[in-house]
Length: 500
Ligand code: NAD
Image (cartoon, rainbow, N blue to C red):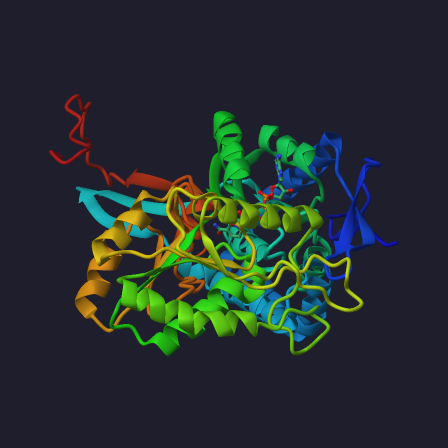
């Protein structure tokens, strides 16, 4: 079985640790490889390399850094099919979905190509007589990225292209469940001309995450993953004085107003709730029809579509959704469905008994649809991260908004309506980071920023776009005086020279 190790100084590196984890093909349940799990000493060695590479890279002109990004972007496009194949084999998502993920990652690289413009500072001439002021943004230093399994290519690409373009060096700790595509992309970045030591990848589990969080040479940490781990990373990282952004779990609602186009709503829900087997932080997992009549029409429209979903491995080009990532995840989803039934929800479509010939040991869950879900049930409160949609009936629009605002998560939400008044009220009042109006998965493009509210994001900055540039840089302000012979004398009045 192949062993996936680390990437250091633009080469594969095995480190000293002998601990390993298994990588599975989720469609068959068979182990297909092993991943080396770094020790603290391995992580510290990688951080030392990133710290050593920092001064030269930070001093490289932004336009030269951008040239590497232009090359990188071309290589990612050229190798998209190869990358999607690697990604799907370990994650299980369909090839079109993997292609889409890589395309969204490439958008961030394109954003990073504009870094000279994005890093432009500000200059004020004559803030006082003979005194000028200017601001610049400088790299923070060594940055660590810790990423989840569900977008093994895109989520790391949310981080390091921007961080590196800003002049930082980077240590990436990807998910140990699907690490192969990450390493191939790192090779492409090296091929694009990135100097050795600027991007390094260390594979591992909690031990390597803790080592990154405790290493004083790591100045900032970007985390994407579940809320309990994100909260832990945020607390431990900020406690040791680091800048941390932690993008976390979600429960995304889609409000269906009585005037919504029901065909459009049904298409939107089928794609956003069941695509990628529901393993997206922007998946819609709760539909909130307003009024009983809307709810009855919605459930009637959804039921046959959910039953007809094509669940198959990614190697089947007709597959609409593949397996979930692991046996543990499969069991967790089944358990939550069981709890939904025990707590009184109606399971309109039960996808649990799916069995695919030749893939009996795969982690497939068929599309599930719950109706009559209430807000005290665990299937409503918890992020299921599987192909399960809950319908929570709301008596009126106000109840729908209240429900969303009361939920602990605040990543995304959408409203489907023809009523501009309702749509405007919705986006103004929802305590949510990303809002869609007749758009079910409102993932911002790369030059805007991605991030939720409440327990979906710890820290002050969203990711990519200008928020990404701000997170990966520190602001510095210079005040300069060139006196040309004028003496001001000693100043005691804090006027900043304005009296001169
Ligand atoms: P996860 O929290 O289990 O893992 C994320 C990272 O943390 C991985 O690199 C993992 O190795 C590491 N980790 C796991 N356990 C740890 C521990 N005890 N101590 C330290 N580090 C640990 O998340 P996942 O299952 O890989 O991904 C799914 C989750 O990610 C979902 O909750 C999803 O909503 C979330 N997610 C959020 C966004 C977003 O932008 N908000 C995007 C994608 C995924």
